[in-house]
Image (cartoon, rainbow, N blue to C red; front, side, top):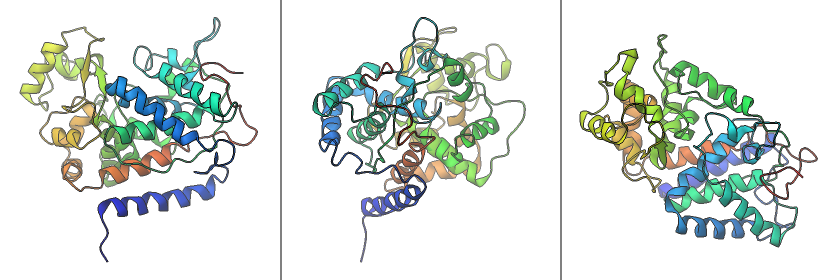
Length: 352
C-alpha cells in the first residue's frame, strides 16, 4: 500500500499529539464538544472573514500565538492592554508597533461569547486562529489541543527578558528556545520576524540537531512582513564596520533593500519573501540563493549542514509542512493553565 505525503503528515502529527496528550491530560482536541460544539466552526468563519478583508494579516495572527507562548506560557497574556500603572507584554520593545491582530482576536472572541458565553478562552482562540490562518494561507492543518485558561498577569519586563533579542548570537538563540522546552529544529520552524540574530564574537559550532531546529524556526519567515530596523546592521554596519554590507547577502537583494530601508529607518515595513501572503517553501528557495533577510537566514546558507537541510526543505514534497505542524503542537503546550487555574476572560484585552 502506498501513502500520500498528506496522509503520512497526518500520521506523524497525530502520533505526536497522542504522546504529548499523555503529559497534558487536561488538554483535548474535543474539549468544547459539549460546552461549545460550534466553537471551531465560528473561529474558522471569523478567520476566513478577517483574511478576506486583509490577506496580509495571516502571518501576524500566527505571530501573536508565538509571542504569547514565549512569555508565561500560552495564556493569552500578550493580549492584555496596559492600565495606568503597569506596562504589559504588548508594550515591551519587541512587541511595540510590531504585533498585529489584537482587534481581530477580539472580534473572534465577541462571536464566541455570543454563542457560548464564558466558555472559550482567549488562549485557545490564539491557538486555533494561528492554525486556521496558516491553513488559509496555504499551510497544512494540525490538531489543536484545547482547554487552556487565561492568565491574569502580563508584564513588559518579562516579555523583554523572554522574547529572543535581535542581538543574540546563534548559541544564545538556541538557549533561549531551550528555556521554554523547544529545540533547535523547533526554533527554525517557529520563529518569525520577531528578531534578526546578530553574529556575536563567540562562535557557536552548529550541531546536527541545531541545524534541524534552525530550519524549523526560520520556516515561519515564509510569510508575513518585517520592519527595516532588524536588518539595518546587515545593510550599513555589518560586524560593526560603518558602511559595510553583509557580504553573504545577495548583492541585488542588498541594493533593493537599501532603496526601501535608508539608514536609521526602523519603521518602514518590508516583505520577508516574494510571496508574503502565502505559507509555502519560497523562503527556503530564497535562503539557498542568499536572499534571506535576517542573520539567522544567512546562517542557513553559510553552514554546510544547514544549507543541505534548507535545500531539502525547499523541494516540492519535502517534510517542511509536517515539521512545522508538529512544532506548533509542541509550542502550544508551553506552561499552559488548565482546570481551576487562571480564568476565562469575557474580553481578551482585560481580566475579569
